[in-house]
Length: 269
Image 1 (cartoon, one colour):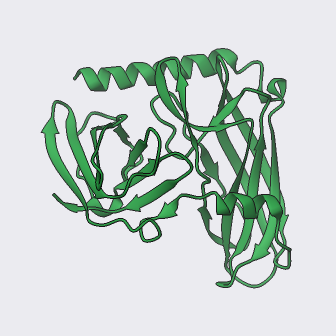
Image 2 (cartoon, rainbow, N blue to C red):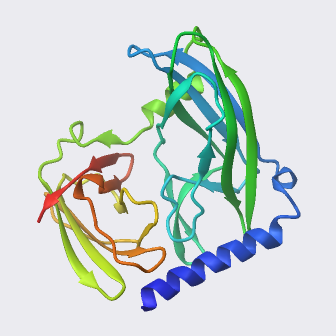
C-alpha cells in the first residue's frame, strides 16, 4: 500500500499548496490566455488554438503532467455548434520539481485545438480551462473562455508552428511491434511496455498513459537497447479499487533529443 499512500500524500500536498496560494490569484503572476482562430482543414474541421503566456520562469502542464504536475481540465459543454474538440499537444519538456518529475511548458505555449462543427456557420466556444501554474508554489488558474470561431479564418503562424512541433506518430517513426505485459502488485498492477524503436537521441524520457484518467501511472523505469525501448510503471486506481487495463488505450510517449514519438496501443507480451 506504500505506493498508494505516497500518491495520496502528493495529491494532498498539491491541493494544500494551491489552496494556500489561491488568494493571490493568477493575475498576480501575469498569466494570460488568448483564443486564436486558425484555418479550415481539408476534412471540414476548424483549427483554432489556446495560447497561454506565463510570467518568466513559471510553468504549466501537459495532458499527463507527471508526479509533480496538475492536469489541465477543459469544460466546453455550453458551446454552440461544436460537436467535438481534439487537442493537438506540442512536445512538452521534462522538468524537475522538488525532486519529482513534471511534464509541461515554460513561459508560453500554444495548444492547437481542432473543432468539429455540428452544422455550417461560425462556432461559439464557451467554457472554462482549469490549469496549474507553478514556480516555487502552485497556483490554480481558471480562465473563462467566450470566443466566436469563424469558419473562414486564415492560417495562424503560432498554431501552425505548434502543429509542426507535435510528436511523430508510430508510423512516421517506423515503430515496430509494441507489447505490454501486466503483473499484479500490492494495490494495483505493473505494466512493462516494449517498443521496437530506434534511439531518439540524448537521455530518453518515457511517459505512459492509460485510457482511464483515474488510474495513476508512476514515472517509468526505462532501459534501452539499440533497437528496443522498455518502460516499466506501476498502475494504481485513485480510489484503491481493482481495475482492468485496455491495451488499446495504452499510450507511450518517448521524448528524445529533438525528437518525440507518440505510440498508441500495444499487444499482449
